[in-house]
Length: 183
Image (cartoon, rainbow, N blue to C red):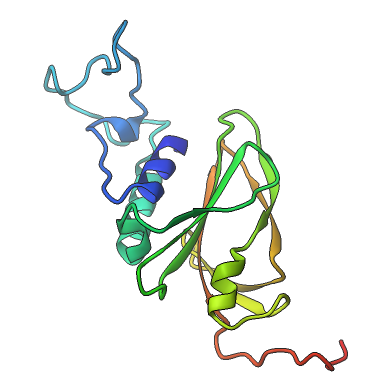
């Protein structure tokens, strides 16, 4: 799933060989090729066997179709994640009306957490200030919420879902807090 998330979100073009969803990854000795690849033989696959990642690949494909920013290799901006096991980046289309943030746990064995920093240049372009709310839509679940402040915290478990993909935009028409507002 980590390799699929990296390829699906960083590359403008991506595809998987038949059987990837079933986690077929035994390598040929002294080669970058896979053992028992359909390149060398026809295979009948049991697409429902345990351990498959068919659902996750389907989700990644749905997210790519919905976000033009993920359909190009251009406009990648790597952002601070205060943990070397978390890769965090922003991708945006040319008009910047589709801005996507991606966090991926690169540790295949352990849950990792990190403070991540939102892209200040994007917030400035939107005319936003340090504590203005940013509208966030989780691209996996569809959940909508707000983030306030540049720094957020994320936890990613490689055994469930080692990545998170969010679409961000200025708030959904909510009033910005005024500097003199009392909480």
